Length: 217
Image 1 (spheres, rainbow, N blue to C red):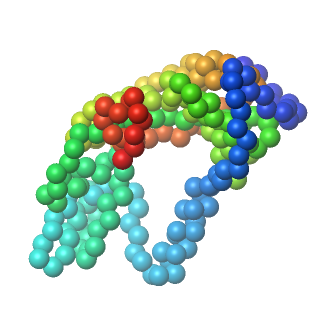
Image 2 (image 1 turned 90 degrees about the vertical axis):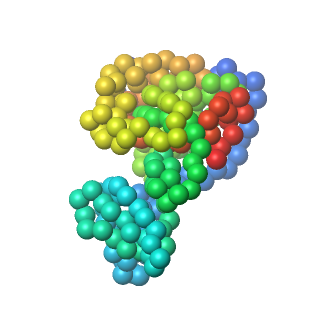
């Protein structure tokens, strides 16, 4: 695979019967993060980063939250937005939790000199190439290759949250990227010229045993 990107080329798509052109917004997670941070600072809200809530309990007056390396926090309201790990704290509060399909995904960040457009092959084991926010890079997703590990359980495997033990830590990144390109370039040939510059990785939670319909929570 060439490391020389060269001049910008028009994007081409093959292996599809029908194409649909549409306008779709791409958000930049860095911009959203900065906007939220500005709101928090303006409202003088205390923020604790890099900590894991290990225990939560409801008392008569408030919620008591214990952290791994931080003093406990007492709150009138708790919004559980921990995504893949959401069942753990929900169950501690006495709510029933169901089995879910937990998937650990890895998405390459690539450099590719094509127009800033997104392409998704929708039928079957589809792939997507999408502009990565306001950067000049793209994200590459493949149904067959982006899911590194998966399991059905009521709780996510806690080792998935640690970089040294997460499923993608033991994967040969170069071979992983080469395999993904070999699959995706069948639909978008210019991907053969792409260069990987990094990966987005992490767990997600979807409904269990819904592969046929791909229904979402």
